Image (cartoon, rainbow, N blue to C red; front, side, top):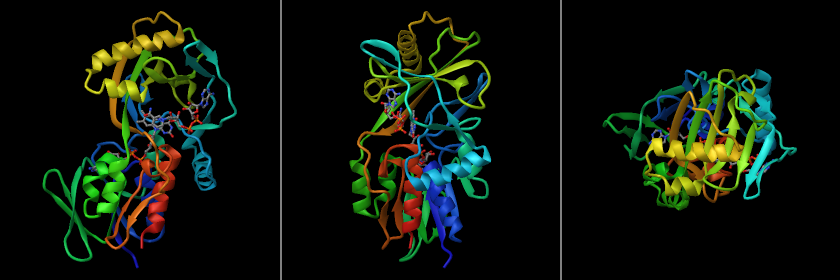
Length: 324
Ligand code: FAD
Ligand code: NAI
């Protein structure tokens, strides 16, 4: 039987669930509070190019995800990224080459979500605040302006765990499970320089000071524009600086960046800061997805699996496969 299904959240988990359910012949509607799509796998358009402000790359370890990835590679939506990898710790900066194959959306991270959404029905700019059971069988969704959507036979919640808790309250088990998941923030700063910085570093795992990660935009396939850099704070630093203003954060993280590269930085031509409140699951779970089939209510997201892009995609697919 073809069901009418709502999915809240159009990140990779929601998109993966939507594609799986559509493939089974169901009628699917996606809702996302954000104007864009792709969730935490986001890129921001600037005069210096489209910069990846969220997820930086992904790895593929599960055979089902590798199979899907091959499709994306064949279509040119994703490409391999092999940066000159470094690490920075209390001893300093050192090359840190490895054998790991890494991938990015091409020519930007959101290329993936944009292509995967083709043919799907997405309502963006709609924040769902409540799920209402309108009879024994059906759900209505309420947005923050009091507008109702529905009726739906099934609802999948594909938001980060803290945002899923209020939506899952009809099932105390699911709501409690989501409430247990601790999610840490992350500050991301983008800096663009019209003159190329004198360094060989293209990506760096940082284990000392406020930062966690540094990457060079131009080292990723298909990117162009200025010498832009993405710098991301550690979860601890972001937790301590959750309420700090964007200008202060930019200044402190830029100083840390200069220290990692060991450079006196020229004045950047552009600075941009973004705070992700729910960036990273502190201890990702291994549930795969959550289901209350008696209610027709399901939950998925990176927090149900590995806290990574691969986990988000697999979790969405698992939730979709569990819909009865
Ligand atoms: P999301 O992408 O968060 O999607 C959830 C969606 O739900 C969002 O679009 C949001 O707008 C929407 N939403 C929330 N509440 C509501 C509501 N009430 N109503 C309507 N819509 C709602 N992963 C990697 O594998 N590699 C990396 O290098 C990497 N780096 C990262 C760096 C940063 C700074 C961040 C933040 C994350 C990073 N990740 C990385 C993690 C990766 O981005 C996530 O695992 C993945 O994108 C999560 O997908 P998702 O669909 O589960 O959630
Ligand atoms: P991966 O296999 O490249 O890295 C996993 C971890 O191994 C890295 O975080 C790093 O600590 C270490 N590592 C790997 N290669 C290294 C090298 N050459 N030198 C030094 N250390 C190395 O990627 P995977 O498993 O797909 O992980 C996803 C990445 O996404 C992680 O780096 C994680 O930190 C990041 N992430 C960031 C978030 C944020 O909020 N900033 C949220 C979720 C994920």
